[in-house]
Image (tube, rainbow, N blue to C red; front, side):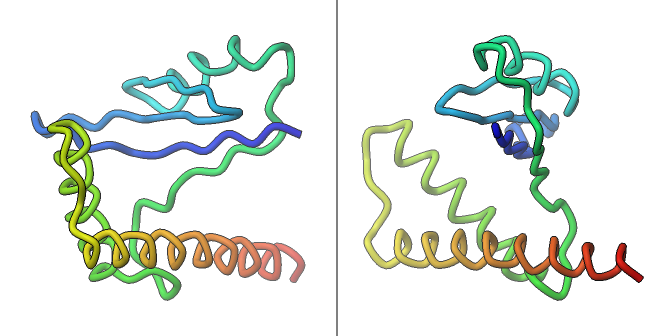
Length: 119
């Protein structure tokens, strides 16, 4: 089974862009569908069966404060990457912890949706 992850990127211009990732391949688009459509031909006839869309709103599993800090650290990480620098160790550790927390939150969010659907 191929899973596609969809991430929402805020560009410096204020425009929103979507980033689809699977099996080490990626595509970008101005809409979710455009990003998925750009990625699908790269998947060697393995049609996706699971599409994971990054939560765009804070919730009980990943708060607005956590989302804001993740956004700040990702911007710093991208700047460091683009300039050939590295993120300071303490910020990198915080970023990794937030990524782990967000991933755990996505699992909890999915479990909650499945419980709700089973009612």
